[in-house]
Length: 289
Image 1 (cartoon, rainbow, N blue to C red):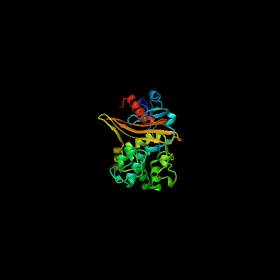
Image 2 (tube, rainbow, N blue to C red; image 1 turned 60 degrees about the horizontal axis):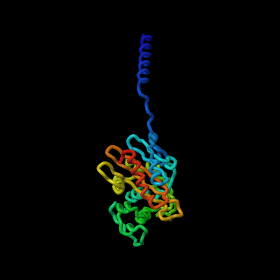
Image 3 (tube, helix red, strand yellow; image 1 turned 90 degrees about the vertical axis):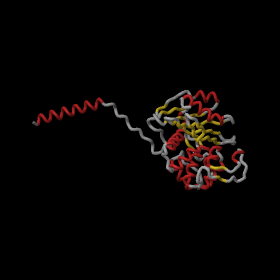
């Protein structure tokens, strides 16, 4: 009886091993870094199109990175630059808006702040504005008021909690200048990671706050896609600094989303428009627009 039992056991084990050998290999589960500012999703695969031709045609130096939601594919030009930190400039207005709404220093996107009467170089800034308008025209004074209301300690706590860029906001005296002076820096890769977290409601803010900021971020809306984004221009009007231009955001289509960060050297006024044109051309190459 014992011999029969051993034979049956051996047969069962052998059959089990044969069955397992016929199964497809198990793919390792991908993992995200605890800080999205450190690494990309590990399963993302670089997919290179000839984006460089657009930079050459427009006469600008820079980079672009585009990451897909479904499938986690990645397209980019100038990967080294995409891992290099640059001043956030006005792209920080996305996070500044989230923090301002969450802390209640401004109640909603339609609440108005009164212009202080000091003329600025951009005429459209010189009036009372609400959050939605201020975001669209990138009104610096408006966001400086929000930053002062948030305060240094709360601002630092939120930026640290989010893990945004290098998390450097300078001193308490620089509370309304740190994103303009270059203290706070972020890589294009980190911009994309932050935007994906925003899209997936994976940031430490209420759904209402996230929804309101997504609404004010709408840049273009068509029956086929919606672009949400924000431009930025570090060193605007200061020729002693190397001016850096940003266009960051994401495109939502019916079945997918694409997160992008375009970063260029701005050497002439026309380069400002090139930030957006570059992004559109690359997305068109991909068939997204």
